Image 1 (cartoon, rainbow over the protein chains, first blue to last red):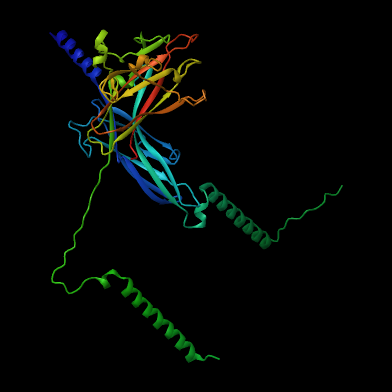
Image 2 (image 1 turned 135 degrees about the vertical axis):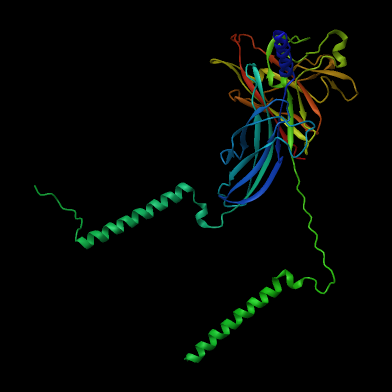
Length: 189
Length: 234
């Protein structure tokens, strides 16, 4: 009896695997915003599953957004939405997308996509991935202060230089106080 | 020569001017100053709207699990061109070919909740085994927004099939995953438009074919592709 139940169970599982569909959704579908150069801003995207099996979603950015975006989290597992589907999604999960605007002297627009990808099926010769992308437009205005043109590395370098100058002044002051001085003296033979 | 009294007068005048400036600035630029007064009742209404936009796509299980090599494509004379395994799952042959029975199991559905029409793009990468490459340009696809086959302008049902097999106008030809004018064969990734303006709740079907060039090293090649749904711009 148990064997029959097991066989029937396996059969039902195999049917459900064959008919399984993979779905992924993203909200909002498009974002348009204005930021100042170097400004860091967070956006919340809701990712949801319109298929009928749990999926692992990977987040990424494309086009001009590549390298300017961080995701929290970068991967997430989502269970399917109940039927009939509706908005806002019931089982959707939020992803915080942090965008850091690049420095621009002029008013500039960068465009790209925030992409949520459901993984490829293993074992197939031409495995597919399903993805949805939210269109993202960011208008960047020039910096408010001149130091905003500087990158983080440049700011660190300038600070190090200032620190070096201060140390030199302190050392010189201490040497003067103690009556010590450097001199270039030719070595006598 | 200004005396002590002169200095005091100048300072007092400055204080008076600054005070007047503040008063004038407040009265001229404060919104409340120009607001309606004396009405018996005043009603202020707020309109708020939380607009939710979203796009979602659902792929059939077969659509993300494509395998080739399980049979030479029907009615082809181009040499070794292989059907993807679910291209003609329901094919019963003969005259039934053109009445929609030979459906493909590869499809994408735009979710019913979508707030925008969607565009779908497809990007594929070369199939590899060890150091051997089977270029993604050897894969042909054809998509169609009806259940399996297409209907031409005159309403005649036609099959959507492999590139170059459009014999006697009976078929819609497929598209190669390599751009027609793209001469750079070293590019590992190709991106082509797949479907435009798919409305909420509608489905697009597709088929894949693989052409194996003569002299290709044998083995199980593995590649992958991504189909991306994006809100249409217009």
